[in-house]
Amino acid sequence: MTYPFLHALTPRDRDWPRVAIMLVSAPVAGLLINFPVMVVLFALGVAEPDGPRLQRSALYVLQIALMLGSLAAGVVLAARVIFGRPVASWVVATPRFRKSLLVLGAAATLPAVAVLMAIDALAFGGELQFPILEPAGLDLKLGYFCAMVVGLLVAAAAEEVVFRGYVLQQTAAFTRNIWVIVALNGVLFSLFHLEFDPSALAARALAGAAFAWAALRLGGLEFAIGAHLAANLMLALFQAPMLPEDPVAAGGLDEVLGEVALAAYTVWIVELLRRRIRPFSAEVEAGSAKKMVETRSL
Image 1 (cartoon, rainbow, N blue to C red):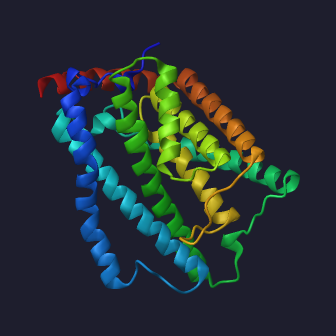
Image 2 (spheres, rainbow, N blue to C red):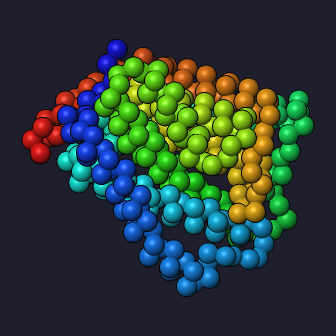
Image 3 (cartoon, rainbow, N blue to C red):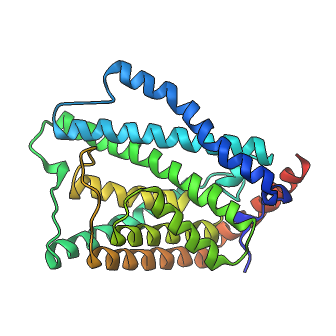
């Protein structure tokens, strides 16, 4: 089984001095990009918002999106300089970004998460606060919805570029054992969130592994970005607003079982797409071959 998403790798990706420089320079580059953004936010008084809960949540999510977007930009720009590859090679193996796959990822994930949330509420006593239905003005609700879509899309794209883009390919530079690549990606993704409750760690690791499989099988990050966005969006609209004072996640077996089901469902949808939508496969192979030529010419 071949994975065109890994075809852009070169001997430079296996060069330990380059990898060591990348580990140091990527966070520095991200912080340098993020610093002026945070200065502006503090100057405008947006960094510590007050007011209605939906408004505070909207501003908080947009801040998180700016921070993650800055860090992701630092990672890919540092990787571009250090490894001498096009930035797009960490995003897609095709000549273009396939927006249709992003939409399919979101459309397939929304109903699945809705079903799991309903089961959790009915069978396990999970709480649904329905933020989108809070007693607030239509303008505030619309602003909250738009902020969630934009902010969570940017955040999802940033996390996918870093973990299913750079980290996944960097791992593959040293091992082609697909199970090691997928499992390690899920674990690192989970640890990145700094919530060490065992069930939260397991749930995020499963999600990360499923997204890694999607990137490998479909030759790009589009589906994973859409699925990632949809899962977070459902939580923000129906479970609870995201706020800085939220307690550290402490789930249970039900959360893990739900994530197992969602990960299995994601893999199933990915396999359906991979087998039934033939143009995707041909486009991936063509784009991969083109990227290999471009990379070797650098």
